[in-house]
Length: 332
Image (cartoon, rainbow, N blue to C red; front, side, top):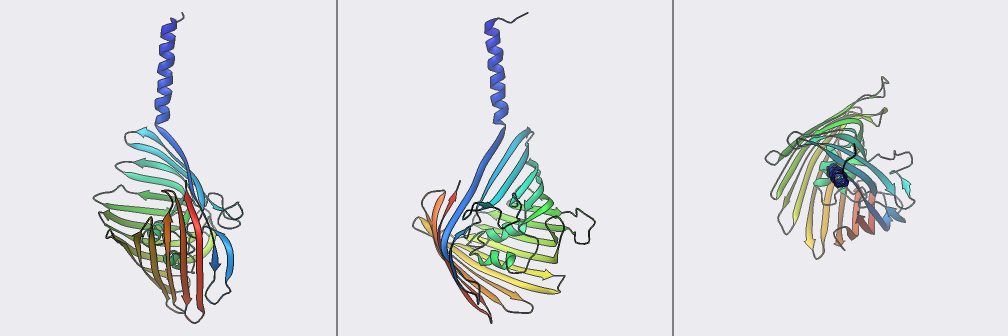
């Protein structure tokens, strides 16, 4: 028996509406950041090099992320993010870097219980380090990022592979989390990483405390066992935002350690802001490193800015590297 034409149209309209409603419960977005500059790079005691650079203020990347509403305040979430070298178009931060080395994860998120993700996850230490310094996540110019991640102190990269991460919802301004990267083989070079973190944000004040214990980098690479503790805070006065960090890194494999401190400020000026950050890295044995960066970030729009940054990077007994960059950063 066939339905009348009017009934068939009603059924088709209902099915179409149901399809639209189902589609509205899921979302996928494409996003990223492109950073290019020209300038001078000089390591302490080294020769200055003038060049065009990708990602001096923020490492260029692109990503895809999405969520599906499963009902009851629970969603499935995923994220795939890849670094890119804009100077050549090559993927990754360096040759051999996996395509989705920035992030590759899938998990479940609950409004009341928090979020659990599996895969390659960004570490809480990296997030805390970029949040509580005036130069953010700049590997080129943030003293904090450079002292923790490019000066031979912490191990384990800014993201952990084979990991599971839990992040709580905000409870009275407080958040907490835990992470672990598992052994994947029985090889002696394979280890495991663990981390815990606590954060607070309410009004003008934000703060965080992070601990991590690292015994592996990637799937099964042998690296030094390092334990890092970092406390960070920021306070927004309106006319300026102030930053402070204090951390220690204990290298258990080499029986040595490092103290790292940092202070900074971001001052709104015109259509942008003046930023400044001072950091000092003091090892148990060896030369102290003092790094100071300052610059101006000028907003052309909400997504595009021009910048000029200077950095003095002094290693006691070796020399001072003098660096500068002028560039553009665009988010999409």
